[in-house]
Length: 380
Ligand SMILES: *Cc1c(COP(=O)(O)O)cnc(C)c1O
Image: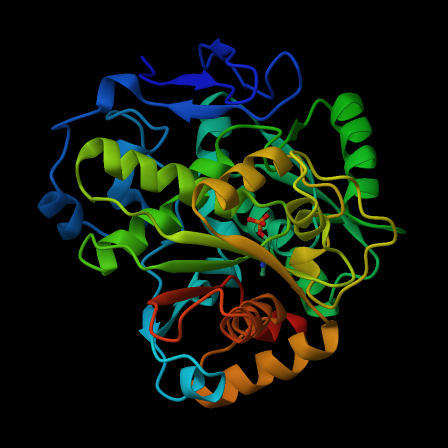
């Protein structure tokens, strides 16, 4: 018996998680709630003794009798910078290095959770549109589960990422346009081939896996969260997920307020969240002609726009955009300063810290964690 429910934070609808849930009746993303797991279900000490993202299984959509589809995702390093902080005018800069996940990005976390649930419900074929790394992760976790994976990706996706999708056995279709254009094709194909569309926030479980970035951050900092989190935002699932995770930790009594200020960084060539934040809007308008070298940020119309904006505002955070030129320079600087393999997205996060300090929004001593969401080698 599954002991969680689905809830829509936008229209307050609720539902039982039967079968393969998609979105709420009004088309918003579902979030998972665990009303029967509030207190005392597991201890912090016990969670610390376990390994990987499934150490948090009491916070995840799995029952005590089920086994996850896993490749050892999670337990990524949290590293205090030695020289990079100084280079950009910050004294307390940390990197959460998601590049060390299986398949080279945090997408592994979301896929482990979503593929686990889907396969338990008998899915044998997956389909998804991707800006890149989700396609690699889906291909790998699909193979791990013995399922087929069809991937629709933009032609402009970095060549190494495309090659990794095929190496892991994903059936790759390249299209003109961006992830939104790929989404239309994926949906049509899902219908005709009765495959399961595992697009993020079109099903409720990828975000549950991604939220473990926030749970892990708390564990690694001995349950004292940092002052600020900088998150390279595409679809925004990681950010929404972490914000959800912090509230779950509060409810469990494992952390105390204040929660971190959450900051989105995007590329100037695709910044729908930054624009909406600056205009005080409650939803993101689609960005025309999205272009950026940071493939993971090339999401012109994030489905979770309202949830991202809520998290940024509630947390007292913000949103900034940086140019591709600055992204390229800063990811190289960060890689060579610290020996960490920065993706363009992670580089954008570091560039955002410099900007936020210059603008006086962050103090140079505020403990700040930048997520290096993926590995740089995937873009070379
Ligand atoms: C997918 C991806 C992102 C964006 O993540 P969201 O949680 O969807 O905003 C950022 N960086 C990399 C490397 C990615 O693969």
